[in-house]
Image (cartoon, rainbow, N blue to C red; front, side, top):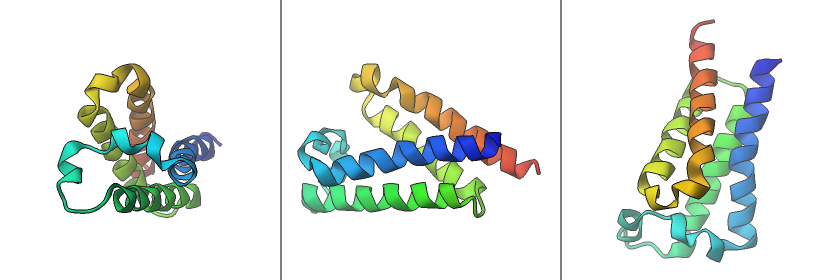
Length: 112
């Protein structure tokens, strides 16, 4: 049961931003790291890519299939979000807890 609850919590943490990217992309542009904006892609394309990534990770985590990999990817991604936006730590501090929860899910799956 705890495994399922962790998967639902992490999936929600990725589904909600995906919905918000679609609903109001302008609110999320500030979270795109500066190095990503130099790739030559428009902000809209970058946000669509992020939305797709969030949806894939959320659905993969929900499915529970080979849970180690999507959980590890989620933890690294959440850590990167905090690292590249340290000036917004007062908003992103929860991402640290989510990253640790993702690691718990990943390593819990490895020990079975």
